[in-house]
Length: 309
Image (tube, rainbow, N blue to C red; front, side, top):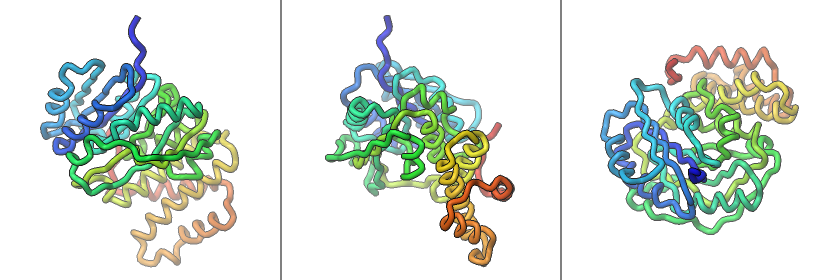
């Protein structure tokens, strides 16, 4: 009988040859695991990323390297990896993020202690070279547990990769929403609808080395993807509690207001600002007409990236 896989590590890869040696050193050194698997999904890198992965994982069991014929984007590729995951738990990572080597072990321990199906921590932008972070360990930490995972997500900030989530929860949620190019906002939101409990640890479970270009520099892309995550969740889950719908509507309106501030020369005279204030003051139920109006504005943008069909 095959040994059960305890954790599936799912990494999307695109032109990160500088970071990968350190990222993989830390990943393969994760402590306390019985039988992990490693799934790497490449989005048509043009550098040596895939070759580095093949070389550094040679002889490591349970390794899957997926190459693709054309570039599609982060959300689509993380979903490819999630679909292949066979572990009880999945932990996703960007190919330039470094996990403290005992972070997965500590997250699993917290999951066992609390029964939570989503375990999050903090991340920090270190500004350091990746080689300086290869063997880091977690600092002392505390954590908070919220039984209602969706309430926990909507009352906090749960973004960034590096989270540990029950694989069956991820698959039931459909992984990332591919109508948003960047997956950070949609994965915790969608998974929380199905998860039993969420934990937020105070420790930095992800260490970000000195950054050399990333999508977070495009603030309009972030506004677009954040809005799409909440818009489609509201559209597809009308059964959610009223309080959850109100909070998601507030976040959608807030994303649109942030976009308007960047693009409108007189933003404080706009409908977006008035709607934003009204939401802050009265926390209304979602207005379908205004949601669709905001969607149309975002959908018409030409300077954001979208998943290719």
